[in-house]
Picture 1 (spheres, rainbow, N blue to C red):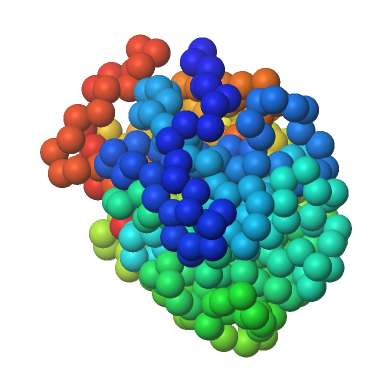
Picture 2 (picture 1 turned 120 degrees about the vertical axis):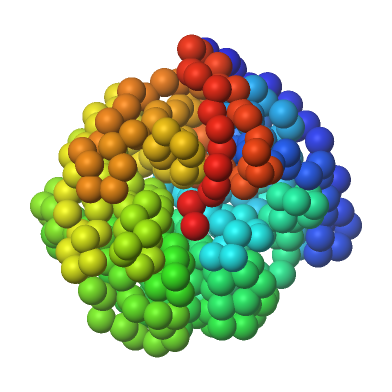
Length: 369
């Protein structure tokens, strides 16, 4: 297993000096970006911990670690032990990476317990093509509790967030330091994601059996959810990703979603009317895992982050087929750090990515689209 460095790596923290934007090296197309909590020097606690965006190759080699600002007007920190935080996603147009955290100096007491007027919840935006990130512009002052995820059409407007309290799933039309979100749904949700202009969300509430829902096309106010997947009240869905595998069915038709209650990665396929279960894979230690991937010639190459490892598997079953594949670890979190969310950047056309640990050469044809 590879273990990554706990050092700060390459970063230019202009936010510490009052600038909105800061830069790092651009991300190599086809590589992963991982949300990491902790710098390895002290045990993770409920206090505000530093956040890093780590770039990995598909075979698990660390390329760079981008340190986000830890103090001042650009600070974006996380609760060190909050496993439901740090979900990452691309904006719907594929241009920007979105993630969330807290405007609280590192070391401060549990930021998720603070009122939003005391500790704003923050949407961070990163452009992998330029290395520019922004942790200042998109503070969300009235989202309380644990902020978990954000999604957007383009990374600069029309945002949605998921939180454990106050607004839960909320719409933010004009993001900024004094933004006020409009509640879409009051249920406790985990990941929000836009696909085909439809807002989707996974659910962590043990009070209901509805665990994956949609809110229709770009909702801007209270919207009753359309339940797409029903499990049991004990089940907790967390990270998920949607793919378009069947050209005869409009829109995204294949779902991979983490069930943290029983450490399973579930697969569902849409037949044009109903989302149908296509089995699951049990992954030891999956917990509040996150998933992303790309469509390649042999199937769907998935990358999964748990708190302690990054791993990969190839599902060759296609649309409607029972999920296949074997999970292989490609990197492990260093002591006193933890992995949270991840995204896979778009590979250059015709790029061959060699995955280690006995995996074959992969012809990366296209990103989920």
